[in-house]
Amino acid sequence: MDPEVQATTIEDMLSEPALTGADLFMSKFQEFMQIGGPVVWILTGLSIIALTIILMKLWQFALMRPESSSHLDRVIDNWKQGESQQAIALLKHSRPVDELVLMSIKGLNSVNTELETLKEELDRVATLRLNQLRAYLRPLEVIATLSPLLGLLGTVLGMIVAFQQMETAGNQVDPSVLSGGIWQALLTTAVGLAVAIPVVMAHNWMERKVERIAALMNDTVTRVFTSAREPVLSQEDAAVRHAA
Image 1: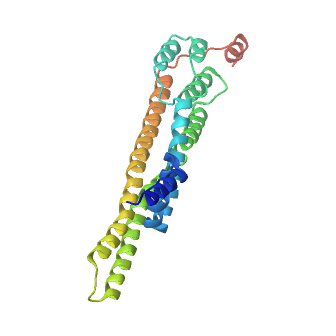
Image 2: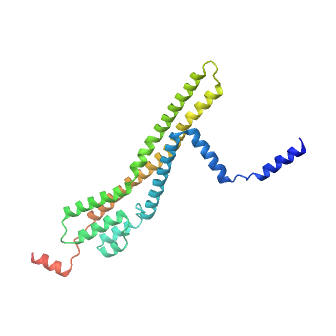
Image 3: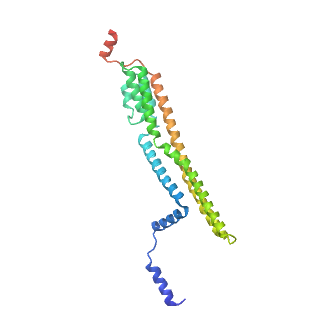
């Protein structure tokens, strides 16, 4: 190689800015999105939405800790022994199960509360709390259902384009061009499945978690009712009941 040409080449290489890891990633990402087409853009948007919902729900479950039940046995024991104040002191009011137990204890301790009214109020609050825990799970289910269908749609559209190009080429079909169009078409199916599989897993795990919380609510509140003693009355309430 001519020394002058070699020196020029080296100078050009040194003068070009080196690509950082982030620049290389963005370049590959843009190339990938360009190959995948609009369907991959849609799937990418759905994946971002799904990831946001999953992180938000994980944060909600971590803050509320709705399945924490290690202290509930002590609450029930205190309640059985008639120590309602000690039982209430052990409850965490921010947790849905504890909230229902608190309502049950206070309602059973009150002489002015009708049992049927208390049960209806407990049903209302339990339904409200479970709906809050199920919030945004339906969009996850929709994304999990639509993602593979969108991927299949992208594959079908890509195959149509590939065969149209083959028809246009006539007898001078280049197998490399055809195979390139096919793998680009199949790319959308792979992306759709890559989005759907983790979303399905996350949705089923969260749905099952809510079901366990509902079972815990029902079991704990039932234990409070079956362990209920005679309501603890103040002197005034006792006098009123005695007079009646």
